[in-house]
Image 1: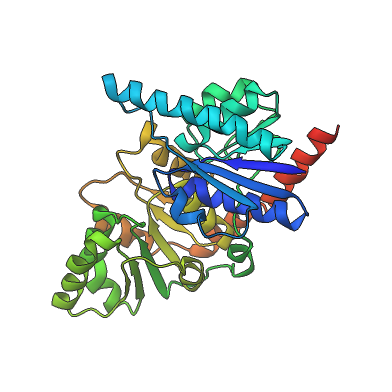
Image 2: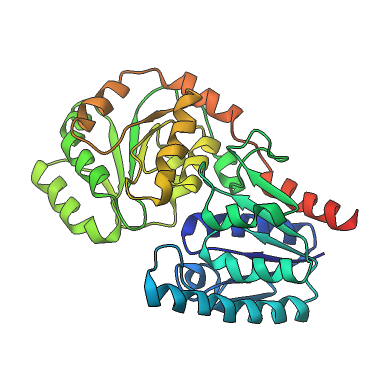
Length: 340
């Protein structure tokens, strides 16, 4: 099978693209990637040997643009759509898998225009606007939050499963500020670190590059030793060592925590599109898998209360909601559909 994976803009979309590509290549399929020069697409995949070819087209987001800027963005999408049609023809692509984000628009519309089967993965609890628009034209629409999804679960790298364990005792806490940092989470960590230190709880903290120096100085002034990172590619190993996480609620991080059996206190990014991080985290809370609070005063007292809770029940329940081999199932489903 000759498959095109498209989408991106943010790391969450690209993690899914990588998981799908790995599964497809493992099954002997040829895979290309079509993304954008904007966002993080090129950073993720320009040097990847996973794909036989990668293409980065000049597109930007459209939704938040106004006036002439919106027209310019639409014009770029149209030009990229024409380019995508040529790329799909050149590689004799048999199916296109969209992982969402503005980068997915040109190749997805190109697939529809050429009657190439389109498959969509929605990463968030709230459907993205592009995915909602494309959904009626898709052969499959996969979502971990949708009870009617033909495939249940979220594509997560195998390492999060292999390093998973049931958390029974709180010895280490990890604060995840994300690649760009999260001031609310960083401030919370500084506010409770003395008490955590007094309880003998080790702290791992990923601050984001912009806030690293401020947070580092804060810990030094408080006299608390922590394992501190501005950014790291070793989150999988760090998560596996932790017993509780404090994190934003981006979909990829959320489901990686689930796969690892790591209970989390989610503090959603308040300005996320359609408030999707809050709805992602609500799914976890409603299934009694973790905790969630909006950014507000009093986060310290809420976290300190969580420290007293039994972790093992939450940790064990997480395994029931994280299905293994989801990416492989999605790729096999594509092959079955196009060969039917």
